[in-house]
Image 1 (cartoon, rainbow over the protein chains, first blue to last red):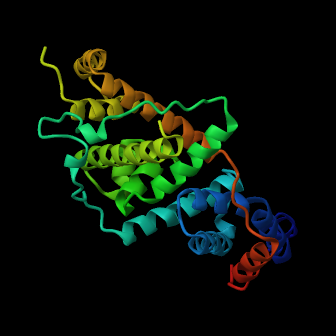
Image 2: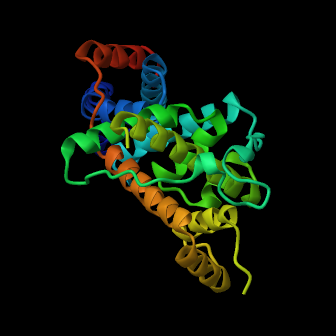
Image 3: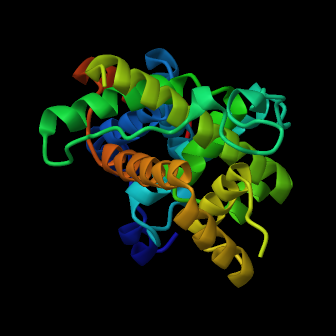
Length: 197
Length: 81
């Protein structure tokens, strides 16, 4: 090793210091992201731990082309995708559609969408709606949850989601449809129960 | 033009959100929405959900304790790089 090489190669202690800063700077963001996807507290912590474990193992491969934050999020999201893949074999679950639509595809009377009257300028309305959203999205089944969060949290489009979960486009549209209709019904029920409209 | 069912309309609303809708389907959807109050309400609720999910993503709600962070550092560093 020549003198120049020694100068630009960070020492082990420097790498440790760098790594420590990454944990201090980004672990909250990663943890928040996992919690927002509706995972249990202890599982979200495990995901963050595993993310940093993998990051440290491959720290020398990190070239700084993307920011460390972006790099860490890629690792975390891959771990979450792996989890979704393993947790439930991806297949279109048989949900009873009849809860929402009749045989002709018209809204069932019990599932008629109703106005929610949420005041977008009211902070308490917004907070309350977020709380309900959290409860209702936690109730989605595994595969619906995976599709829903990838689309609305990670802003992935249908092609990317189908490729990631190895599902067909038709399966995808069926799942996103069911997830949305179920979520909407749950939100409406909870909201109207509180506001007794 | 034959009117589509509400179930089909919901499907098209979700496809439109991604820009994956043909011109013909788009026209069918527009027509359905002008005659169906229920689906107009669904459309409104759908946008409301999307807006709130996005907004919620940007809020920082959960944090790790200092001890948790130290233990993450400790556990990771005890494996060889």
